[in-house]
View 1 (cartoon, rainbow, N blue to C red):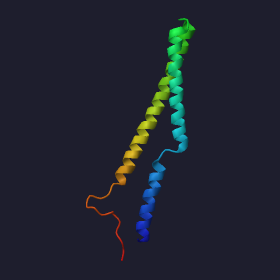
View 2 (cartoon, rainbow, N blue to C red; view 1 turned 180 degrees about the vertical axis):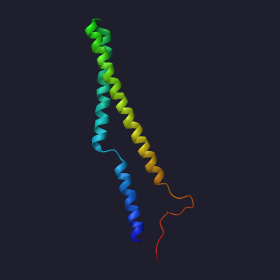
View 3 (cartoon, rainbow, N blue to C red; view 1 turned 180 degrees about the horizontal axis):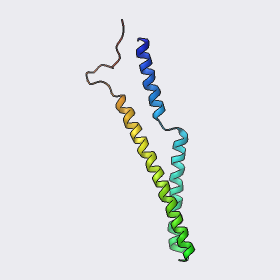
View 4 (cartoon, one colour; view 1 turned 135 degrees about the horizontal axis):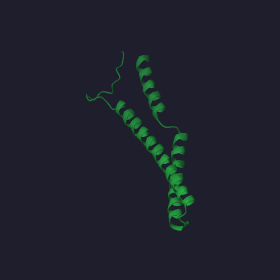
Length: 106
């Protein structure tokens, strides 16, 4: 394999690695999901059991706002992950003629 072909292969691998979300991003997305579940629980319980006063209504609105913000951030993460995954898998598809796309210099 020529050095140019080797560089191309390494560049493809490097690009694919850079496109993947980091473990920290996955952890943040997971923690956001946990927080969303807990906020939903808190909203449900404040609506059912808390006295219906103005301060409690404000608390409910604040919780709802926090939930919507987390859901928006999570949707953006999912959208970005899907787009990156789609683009990286499209760039790694094999050529239609059955060759591997790398030529050997002999």
